[in-house]
Length: 474
Image 1: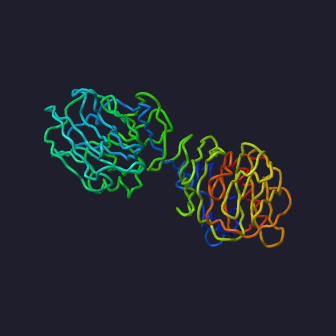
Image 2: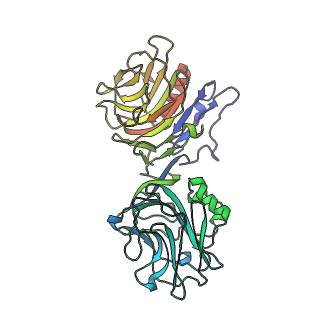
Image 3: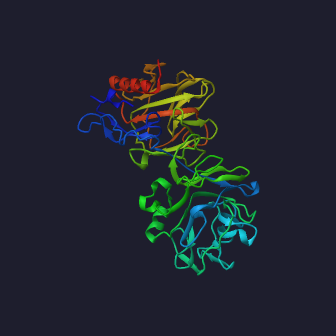
């Protein structure tokens, strides 16, 4: 994206900018002054243009016990445990029954080696070379349904089983003999041919060493979790397999490339996860990062997340319940808001692009087929809506009785309107202020918010750049 087209003589504070084009997702640039003493020049390849760097999903594998589905891979290499060994993952139970998390535990003793499972508490079960079993149970106790927990377990080189929940107490149990050998596959979400998982799993790994205390704390990451790319080179050194589990369906990729998980049976979709990863096509967008900091990020908190499309790229809102929460853009004042959208239809009413309690910016207002906004307690239908790729610019100007303006692709549409200064302190992207209705149906590719009314020259320069970037010919 060539920011240089409007770099010079642009002395306005850019509060938030979310780019979905050459940055390949969610780059928000804000809190900077264009021109003056802090000129932002063209983006540098080393950092500014990082593809897919700012759109994240926190999807997890959603296991449903009644579906009798599981994931599996051949237990070669480090998955065939021997000596020092560790397995860990994030778990969120949907029910409190006994269920398999991951391991190598078939129906007969010859097919049993190790198993991480839940039965009243997290447990790690092992069969040794003498064909004896040993179990270590987490004194953490029972897990609450609907809550994420980080569990790691394994065997030390000195011959002790261990298990730990949430970077807390490490419980141990002696096991002097090594793991027995087995031909059993590595399975996720079941054991002994049943005991199917009824939970969500995220960031599952196996390593051929035991994490140090510092490494375990880093994996827990204060309750936020990590994905494979977050690990340092030294932390990756003993990882035998790592599955982020962010895929929407089908097989799950091993980030070390050796042990992709295939479906053993049934279908496993994704659900909300714990550890964020960069979006890939069809992922549900849960966190649209902001260069201005976490206070201005768009986050999925109150409704279903929109889907990411890599083709444009774009956030695709379904018009039913997709929404992102957008907070702390600013107090009451004048605004210039640019948004690049491709709506599904130009008919209907009340499709909200941005919304909060006193100010909605809408592709469709309460009048069918009209574009405009809600302000000062009432709807303002400015012009006819269109269902095509476009740049809409809201110049929310309160300086005169009717100084507000709406532009499409750089040309004013409809008549001037009256705007009463309103805040954008708490808002939603793709829905009304409470996030429970008037959902937008279509793509949002890019958006920009400035806490002032820009000059005609500045506004036109930005609109021209956006249209060039997105291939829009007015």
